[in-house]
Length: 266
Ligand code: PMM
Image 1 (cartoon, rainbow, N blue to C red):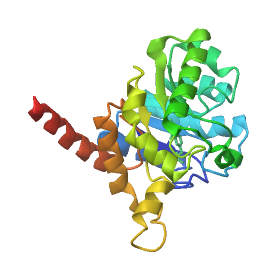
Image 2 (cartoon, helix red, strand yellow):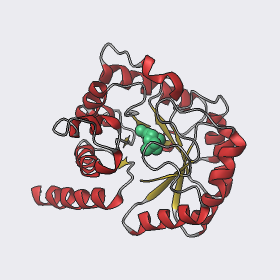
Image 3 (cartoon, protein in one colour):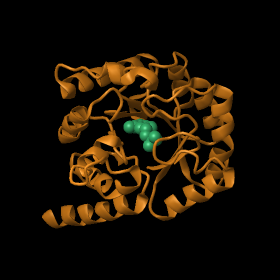
């Protein structure tokens, strides 16, 4: 899954793809490099980010989604608002990537149930402005797993089909670096739940912190793609359904090596 943030303030690519033509060209480049899905987002969810109004979010994403869907690209919309999801589905999106796991908008479940699209339920505890205060767990892997199971149950109770559901541990959302490493290490416990799992660590700050240990300061987002590709291969090995990344080629390459190696094991 290739990331297309049509926002002025995302942590790694904010402001780069606000122009519609630039956004479309970047998305098509990602598909030519091997992305199966383009995830279009109009609201930044980085820690501390302020929210935007629904009409602004809709205006940012809808034309781009329509243009990509018209060209046969599978599009997901990164939103936690039912109104935005409905507009995006109308424009051709077939996946709703909801970082709130259905918690932010009580109307989201009915949009998903009535349209039949896929719903990515990410582990989430609160909006970006104050989420790091919520990073407290007894056992992060067990707690995230249990909270995701609750969200799945809620979705099923709301009339969503099990086949529509994808789950995601929400790397960096109400999580410290230690929490992220624990979830990465035990991702197989989430895949064991039987739902497709999305893993999204691309360029996140815990990677910058690790890579900066030698350099004396956090490595900036632009220098984190090799590390991101390493997280991708670990996620594939743990049985993940997909990874959400900025740089397609590095993940495409590790996936090719991983698949060929796996085939040679048999
Ligand atoms: N992270 C971000 C945005 N959307 N969606 C899912 N499903 N999982 C994530 O971890 C996730 C997401 C924040 O990163 P970005 O600013 O690079 O988009």
